[in-house]
Length: 300
Image (cartoon, rainbow, N blue to C red; front, side, top):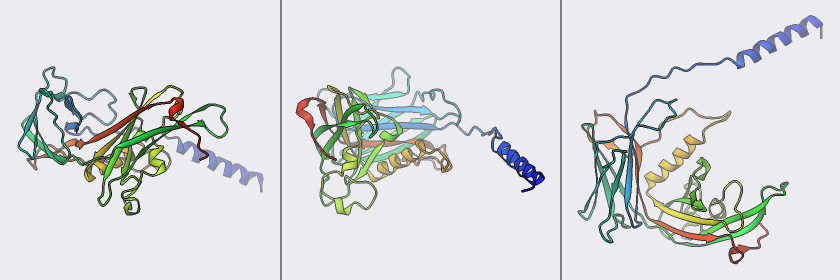
């Protein structure tokens, strides 16, 4: 290759590389402020809460402002109505039981009603059944094949209900702390991944689901592990799947960000829309410690 041609090609390459480092200062218009709803009601005893905030600008990393002075009620299909109050004006609306009263019951349908700044929003969700967590075991493992660091991998056991389509979310705690990274959003249909679950109907949850309840560093001896299985509606199942897609969306092949669908509907079609989701779940859980009685020897 002639020297002049080589110099010319190198110059073109340098120009191309410089063009790849051009900084684009995106100017995003700030849209109208919307109501954001974070509502999870369960069949567990004790108080229940619904968090209301206001949306903020895309690049605003501060805590979203609380949506205060709203009227929040939940009613079920048996005619009961539950009032949620926010006396401290923090945007955290709470229902307190009286005596042994429990808000959530399997099989009932619940309607959330929110009146806020002249707008009325509604959402509906049903509490579906959820299987028991039969047991939790631990197996000693290396952190990676080349690592000298060892820990314990947890595995829980639960069995899907037969002859029906069921949706679940799995959560887990290490020493009382909820593991809440994006990869810890674990959802399942009939105890498997994906929508083609008919072959697994009524069977034990598959191995990848059972072993999904592990932190990055595995567990240590005497750690306390709690596993929860939540029942979901089909809409809530899709919400969690799409939310995980958005919060883990990055890298070279990332897709454009998109709003996650909501079931919070403004009764006035011309009014301001809302974001967030209203979810009702039955929860079954089990807690186990990493002690000799729960440790198994496995080859896989």
